[in-house]
Amino acid sequence: MSTTVAAYAAPSAKAPLERTTIERREVGEFDVLIDIKFAGICHSDIHQAREGWGEAIFPMVPGHEIAGVVEAVGSGVTKFTVGDRVGVGCMVDSCRECENCEAGLEQYCLKGNVGTYNALDKNGEPTYGGYSEKIVVDEAFTVRIPEGVALDEAAPLLCAGITTYSPLKHWNAGPGKKVAVVGLGGLGHMGVKLAHALGAEVTVLSQSLRKQEDGLKLGADHYYATSDPATFEELRGSFDLILSTVSAPLNLDAYLSLLKTDGAFVNVGAPEEPVALNLFSVIAGRKTLAGSGIGGIRETQEMLDFCAEHGLGAEIELIRADQINEAYERVLTSDVRYRFVIDTATI
Image: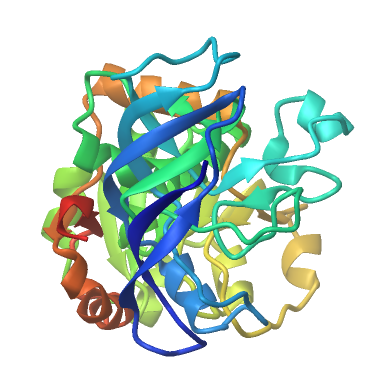
């Protein structure tokens, strides 16, 4: 039988989130029931709750940075047992049959993966995310959180961590490589930590020097203000990889000028507005303009294990559930260092 749990939901686009109840499905043969302990607030939650990325499904329970403990398992579950520390990220299913799914790239499922919230599952039922007491997820889309990472600091790794780790690994960030991270927010601060741990020389490109001290403590070797035109002159042709974590439209031509020959500018932040580009900015220097989305389940587990090995977790501000709407407004003004995490015991 299904379970009724408390949650925070947006009843309609742009409406404040409010406490409500939702139904979680019965635990199936390959499902795990997770007692959610912490849920991170991602900027993606705000984009979707306010329909910044297009039409959405309401009521919406956001949250795809979920950390908790297994409360029950289905009869066919082999990966987890009751009491295990686990996490759920941005997706809860995929076709599992296409070439991408078979390659461990479920995030790029050719039939479309099933989002943790604001999506329809294979039965046509809406999915609800982590701003809730419990969730039921197939074991194939559940990952183990190593003991070396605190649960509250682990929650943001399920989106912010994997969203930055995946492109850093794909574009071979490591010793001898110069990597720039645009923006020092929820995504950017993890990008800095991970690029540093991978052995790259790391530069933060931020609008101002306001967070410079933080950036250097997090592992950056250099920090520049992009509001200073001299930055783009001084750093021209400097980087092998630039990872853009901001959701505001950028002057792509200016940032592409900072790449070395064969360098890559990779977007993980997703602005709501289109951006302009002069194609000569990529033609000259054989540069790559790319995007990257989260990671597959295997890579997400790899990232969590890497973070445990290197003692990495997100920099968080723990909040009560009744502070979610305030937190949304603070995210929009960059007033968080660096990820809000909801203590779901307060729901």
